[in-house]
Image 1 (cartoon, rainbow, N blue to C red):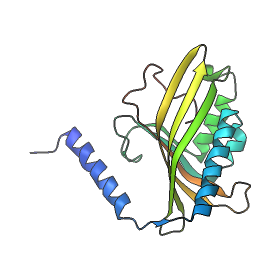
Image 2 (cartoon, rainbow, N blue to C red; image 1 turned 30 degrees about the vertical axis):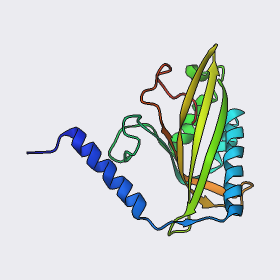
Image 3 (cartoon, rainbow, N blue to C red; image 1 turned 45 degrees about the vertical axis):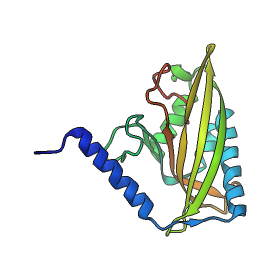
Image 4 (tube, rainbow, N blue to C red; image 1 turned 180 degrees about the vertical axis):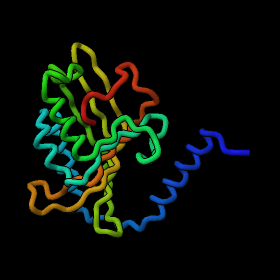
Length: 190
C-alpha cells in the first residue's frame, strides 16, 4: 500500500527537521549577536521606507528569498509550493515591479511597520551565520490593516566590505498564519 500525499508531506517535513537538527552549530558571541540584531533593524528600516534597491544590496549574487506556503512551513523549495521563491534575478524583478505603478496592489505604496524579536544566531560548519527571529509586519493601505506574523530563518555570510557587515545567502520568512485572510496575498516584502 503506497503513501498518501499527506503522509509524504509529513515524512518530508520530518526529514528536513532531522537534517537541520543534525547540523553542527556554534553559538555566536554576544557582540556578533548585537551586530546581527542591528542588521535586522536596519533592514527593517529600509523595507519600511521602501528603499528597495538599497535593500537588494543585502543579498549575495546567488541568494534566495523564500516564503513557504502556510500549510507546509518546513517545505523544501525544490519539491513544494512556496508563496515566494525568488532567486536574485527574480528578486530584482520583484523590487523593480514594486517600485512602479504597474504593481497595483502596492501603488500607492502601503505603509508598513516591522517588529523583530527573539533574535538567535549560530555559526554553521561552513562559517556562515544561521539567524532566527520572530517578526510582525503590519501593513496599512486604503484604511485596512493587515498583520503578517511569523519567524525568520536566514542564512548569512559575513561581508566586511559592506556597511552592515553581512549579506543574505537565503532570506526565509515563515508565516504563522493558517491562511492569508483577509488579505489573501503577500504583496509586500516580509
